[in-house]
Amino acid sequence: MAGLRFAVLFAATSAVLLLAASATSRPPAMYVVGDQMGWAVPPGGATGALNEWAARHRFLVGDVLDFKYSNGDAVLLVSPGDYERCSAASPVSRFADGGGGGGGTRFTLGRPGLLYFISGAPARCEAGQRMAVRVVNARRRSLTSGAPTPAPAPAPGTLTSDTPHRRPLSLAQKQFAAAAIGFGAGFILTYFIVWLCVCCGG
Image (cartoon, rainbow, N blue to C red; front, side, top):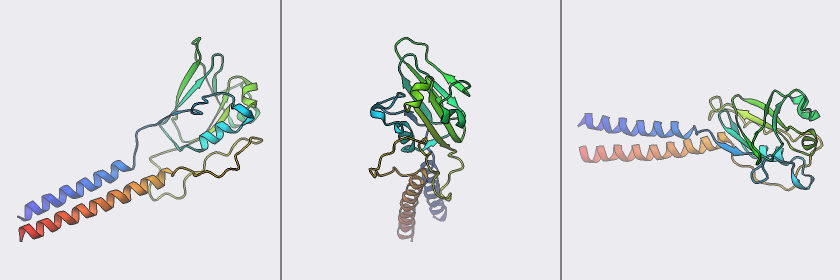
C-alpha cells in the first residue's frame, strides 16, 4: 500500500513540475510588422507609428518579423547612426523582394539587443518608415528577473500619442501568472490525492 501511495505522489508531483516547466516557454511568434498598415510610410504624418507598434510587443530571440511592402521598396537592417540619419548607403543587411506584385521579407530575430530597420528609400525613412526593435533572450528571462526590459523609445522628432493606453502584460508577468496557476492546481491535486490515499488506505 505504501508503494501505491508513493507512486501516486510521484506521478502528481511530476505532472505539476511538467506543467510549470511548459508554462514558462512558448514557440517562436510571427509578427506582421505594422499590422494592417504593413511596412509602409505611416499615414497622416504619424512618423512614430512603427516604433509605437514595436513598443506594444515583446520580441524574443527566435521570433519572426514579417515585413509586407509595396513593389520597389526594401527593408534595411542598419546601425544606430544610419537609423538616425536615414542613411541607406551601408546597411548591415538588405532585404528586397524581386517579385512584381509587391514584396515581403521574413526576418528571424537571431540575437538579443536593439535592431534598427529602415526603408530602402531614404525619403520613406524620413517620412517615418523606420523602426527600432528590442529583442530579449527568453532563456535569460526568468520568474526571478527584475523589471521587464523597456521597449525602445521612438526616434527623435517623432509624434507620440498622449492618449493613455493599457500596455500588455510583460513576459515575466505572464510567466508568474502561469506558474502561480500551475502551482496552485498542483497543490490542490496533490492534497486531494494524499487525502484519498489516507482515507482509502487506512
